Length: 50
Image 1 (cartoon, one colour):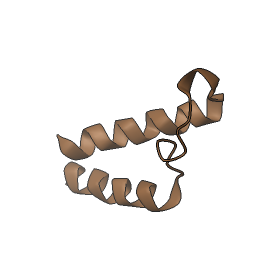
Image 2 (cartoon, rainbow, N blue to C red):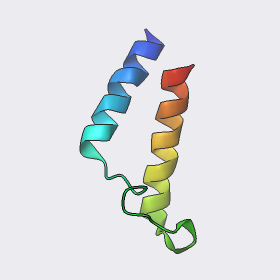
Image 3 (cartoon, helix red, strand yellow):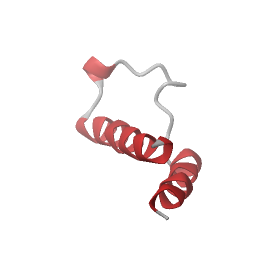
């Protein structure tokens, strides 16, 4: 159940949230909100793969 939820959430993130890797964002110059989005996406992806 948990894994299914995170897979759904990962699809939603992919559709809604911006992809900073496509924009070639420099992490040293990223703002706090951009780092928060990157962290959230990493957390969801990690849980979707487990």
